[in-house]
Length: 113
Length: 112
Image (tube, rainbow over all chains, first blue to last red; front, top):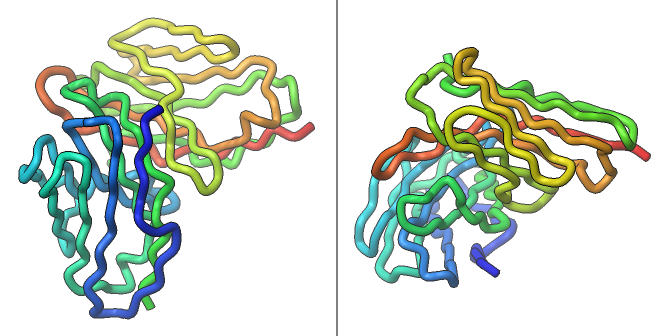
């Protein structure tokens, strides 16, 4: 069974703090993704990575950065958290180019106050 | 205009009803069409996918793609309370790496 784990289920941070969200997958998948999910907007892609140390911007990369030093781990960084980054953050992974099947983690509910 | 439009619902039906969930899209280059199911406090999971046009059936679930109308549907027969979840459609183009474009999701509640 593919397992994607995220470091926290709930997180509360203050405006201006640096925030790290960690994601680990155990199926040796090449591709990893970070999305945010907001009511009425669905899932929006922030960044993705198709290989170690490789990263590509998604639709809404502003205010975020990522790091992929190991194949199984993909980190999302909020350099200076703002209230409009309050959201559900979902990590996903997939194999090769058949990325229509993405495996998602349980999500991190981030609140920035 | 969003590339993928999906009615957010909520949709409430009695147990045993036939449920129809729909998405429309604007990009004719989409070739892969997926339905993901998301239970409360969980991440989405792939339910079905279809390549190009046509129907695909899996148990009580049927996915339909009408490329001429740019319209996809998911039908659930004999709906059960365990089907209560948010259903998200997703699409991508073919060839190389292409990101998935998700609809906003439709919340479904099946009551006993």
